[in-house]
Structure formats: structure tokens, C-alpha cells
Length: 68
Image 1 (cartoon, rainbow, N blue to C red):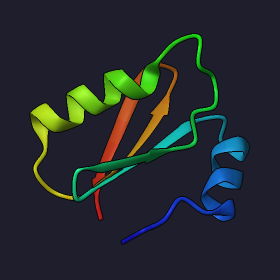
Image 2 (cartoon, helix red, strand yellow):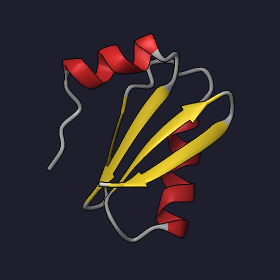
Image 3 (cartoon, rainbow, N blue to C red):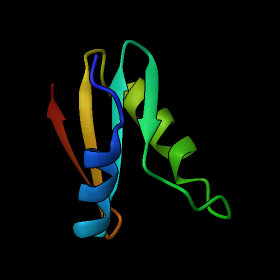
């Protein structure tokens, strides 16, 4: 299982994006902003569309998905 570690968090800061890791029905993310609950939106979209492990990167309201 891939864990959200310091390298992934640093990468999200460098590319100015939020990173979500969806694996075995567990979602981890680098989102820290709570005023807009982006993580909840991602959780719903991932659970509806995907059954496998996936890495999501959101950039300017676009989502890039890749299987892991």
C-alpha cells in the first residue's frame, strides 16, 4: 500500500496540486484546506468510477488519474 509520505506532500507543493491516493477503499490526500471540501468530491467521484487502486492529481479543477 502506498502511503502519503513527505515526498508526496513535497511533490504536491512543488507542482501546486493536490494529490489523492485511493487504495482499498481508503483515500489519503495532501489537501489541507477545509473551507472547500474537495476531498469529499473526489471520494464520491472515485468511488463511482473506479474499483481499483488509483492516484489522482488535481490541477486547476482538472483531475488526472493513473492506476497504481
